[in-house]
Length: 439
Ligand code: LLP
Image (cartoon, rainbow, N blue to C red; front, side, top):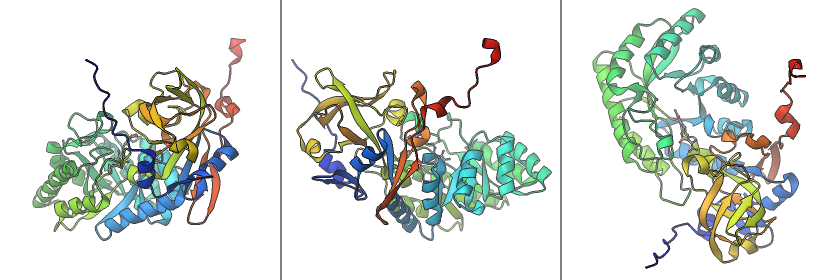
């Protein structure tokens, strides 16, 4: 007996559009982002190309900040999208930054984010990076191990500084997300074992150059349920009480990032619900709360434009000029990204299942399998949606593919600009040398 095909739960093109107010389909101009025809961007810069919406970034930061007003400070997780223009929008919206490297720290400062709103996370900060952070006078270092605590103490004391420190605890909570983006389980490399945190906090208070001021946690990314947050926050709140009972000073709680978005229009945790979980867990503790969202702020605001190079196997395989070298998420996490044709005529045509792949020589270079899309022909253009987070930042030049250009559209100001040109092929090898001894 033939097995009937599984009903596809993929949202339709009109459903994808309806859930994304910054996108619209115009009968003549095709897909618009904040009013800008994406075909015009592709005409000007070619494909693949990234397009971000400034008004969308502002609106999302505004929405999250409003939900957290008077409750928690927003430290944008720079790793999600570290372009200077994106960081400038975050700075203008009064966000701080969560950085994980000296490079991200330099970017955040360059974009105008004040040092006193920057926190430094990461499991393996180098001595040089810690020195740079202390020299800048950042708000706090989120320490993840006893070894890092000792290292930071030595560096701060030698510089004659006192480093505000929070200890990142590993609450051993399952965030219920993809294994590669889960961080809060005891088996993960992140944070300090919950059972050891109190002793280490007391130890930190005795070390020169350090001032322990609180705790941090981050349990994972693309979290769509509140229960894991509630569990982690409850463990953190209990530890705050224990520490205070033991005579320690605890004034700050950094609650991490991880708030998921509806790539597939699946219901997610809203900022209001997230705020509710924070409020419930830490009520009455008089803590300065912080959060480190990345994806929620920038993910929906970006798209990756690509063109169909050719189709094969009777149109069932669609080969794009964009690849895993631009958007790695499907290859790395089996991530689902909406795909919309830029042409209104194409978007309205009957859909059938196709595999959408890139030209890179890896089977993993596949954006979608069995996706319901209208018949696409060579030269047609598509937008891969919700590519603003962990998109351009995770790009590579594998297969000697130059980095794609980036455009910022500002629907609030009805203008746009290229904010990174397409990399020239020569730039790929301009710093390489062939030593004389090879001749
Ligand atoms: N804070 C810390 C300490 C983090 O490690 C992260 C993300 C964040 C905040 C921000 O998390 P978000 O709000 O963006 O979920 N490349 C993967 C995601 C890796 C996330 C790593 N850490 C992806 O494309 O799904």
